[in-house]
Image 1: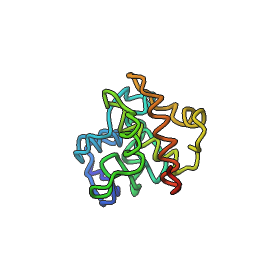
Image 2: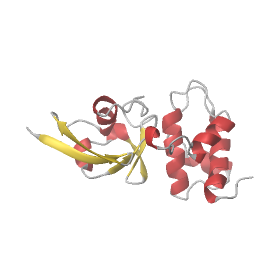
Image 3: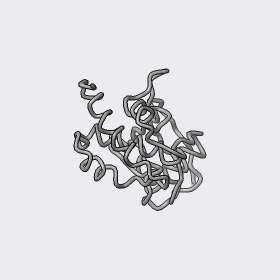
Image 4: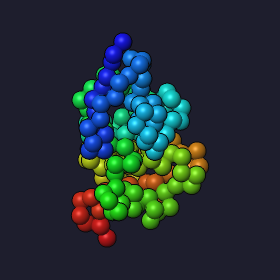
Length: 161
C-alpha cells in the first residue's frame, strides 16, 4: 500500500512507513518509535494514560489515527525535560508525591502541561480537578496531583513561592 506519515516527535522529524492505515498515534509512538512513556490504558480515550501534546494541545493518542496527523508536532513525556532539567510539572509531581504506582503519571503530567499552556489551570483546586478530569488514577493520588498542578502553574508563570 505504501503509506507513510511524517511527524515531528519531541523536536525530531520522523518519517514512518505504515503497513496499516488504522495505526493509532499511541501504537506508532510505542511500537515503532520506541517511546513507551505514553501508556496504553483503556485504549478507548476514557482514562487519559495516553495523553500527549499534539500541535500544542492535549490529545488521547489512542483515539488519533497516525495518518490523520501527517505533519503534526508531538510532544511525549520523553520530550518534556530539557537535558537534565525537569519540566516544572515533573518537578512539582515529585515535590507533592503526586503518584503512587506511576502508571498514569506520564498522562497526568502531559495533561497538566497542556492545561497550564492553555491557560486553563489557574490556582483554584476545583478548576484544576475539573481540567484534569479526563485523567484517571486508580491509586487515588488526586490531592497530590492537584497540588502539583497548582504549584507548577505558579512556577511556569514565574511566581513560585
